[in-house]
Image (cartoon, rainbow, N blue to C red; front, top):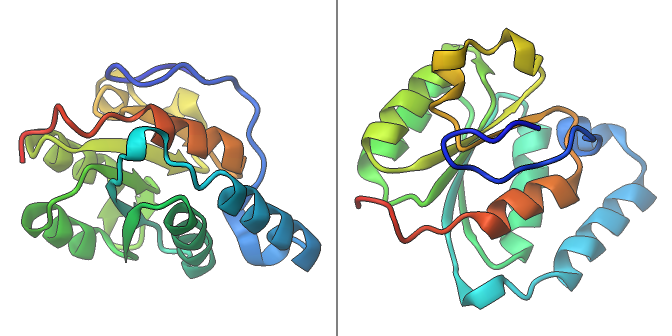
Length: 165
């Protein structure tokens, strides 16, 4: 995966959380156990993370796993709700789908960038479809379905300290 706006270098392999309800109960338990076993939260940094996706199963799964990691998680299922939370909430990181029912996650990335918040794109849109200018707003871009380890690595490498809020 390509690095965006100083984001971490990631490989091209991705494969887990797009439709969390579509995986077996055993796989869900293994993913939950993996998150819980890595609840060490390097450096004790607790981040405030906003998950933005219109698929409620994805939001619930990501919220559960990231919370187990020790972070504070809020969620939005629309661009309007995400914009409001971006403007009013103190956030360290946003993990957002690009295609939302009421707009485009690239708009959110632009607003978040102006607010000093890093955004990770979590999308089914091929990276080649992201225009160079749009992609520059993202700290990292992950393609659905995404592996938990890949997302966890991006979160772990995110330093909330440079933000403006």
